Image 1 (cartoon, rainbow, N blue to C red):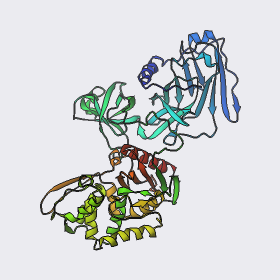
Image 2 (image 1 turned 135 degrees about the vertical axis):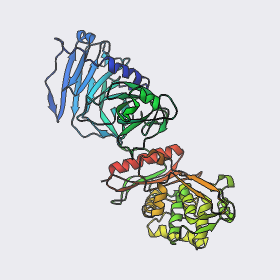
Image 3 (image 1 turned 180 degrees about the vertical axis):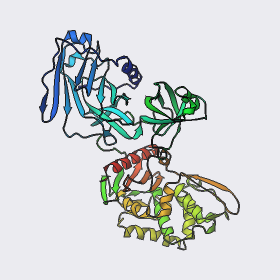
Image 4 (image 1 turned 135 degrees about the horizontal axis):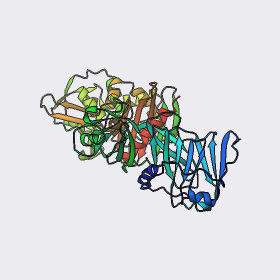
Length: 533
């Protein structure tokens, strides 16, 4: 069977078809007859034979009203038997979604009866009200994963409709636990027009927002992030004032809506991607680790030593904090601090806080600049303030790693600028597990930015967190650190708890692209949080 790639533009066509063909096609025909319902290995199978007279009129093939195929006039060109099976067998499922319906399989027995040229829609019911984003997905052996079909949800009737152009498919409804397709919407006044803020859809996406009160709708473009799902768990979108007025009065304040995606921004590249039973990563090394039971959930090249870049900084911070410093203590910056950095890179290449000799800051300022902004110069300031000589400080980093069982780890300097700082993802899991128990280091992982003003020169500094995943609100981070060197590629360690408070650590080393690093490591963490037992 040849499976053609489903065009994205069919999505809009489908939205029109779903309305036009909402009425069920004529289901009566003297020449059409169901075979007896049979149960083979607990699968429920039904077959109907459609003759040419029936296919000219059109016919809706169904199974217990829960699964329907709408074969409108012109879809089929020749008579065929149509088989529908409700599968009750164990099947590998897409790792990031929840199964919401039974798995069905349909088959046009006469493959010459369908030309693939005209898509048709099918309807699948789900058992109870669910406001998560739903996708009908079919299993594609070519990708060894589940691929999504354009899907429209009808939450009031508890069914979805999807468009397909295959004569055979195995499919089901899956719900995305991280995104909503129905819920509450409020309004704001900012840039006038048909715009909206969404916590689920990337900027540039276009959505159709339906009011659940009056069936009015408005098409909007996403141009901002929000509302924060952690604070507003039932808010699906916020509409700009002008857009809100097209479906409700402002006095309503908050209304019930459902969301229908019309165009998904290319930045959301995995929306149409096939999803297998486990996440994939391009990292040279990767690991998912459950702290609760000290279990490796997924591993790739776990014992291969690689440069760890700025992931080094979490160990430097831990050694510094173990000296029990007073973080309110004021220290004067010295240019010699940053000169250590330039042994490994050019001045313009080093991430740093722009400080002048004699600028006064607190030890807390230096610590959070190092962790939040990954500043290299302030790490050396911490080393100087620790009371240890620089060689002794680095020796302590190595001793601590060895004591935790990280035998494949070595540090030659405290910032990560040297490619001779080496570790494995298995070792890094041990380091992260211990280091992120330190409250100050854990706190840094959750700060979107850190600001301070030098005490004597009154120069303000605003340092943004290098972890761009913080803005999404997807995880409640209890530990995170980014890293990059040309020799190391992009490295990332993330730590977050599940709903029961059980922490999972995800680590990737040597990914070629920064965006991929965030996306793939986040997927690994999400998989771990769904898998932990």
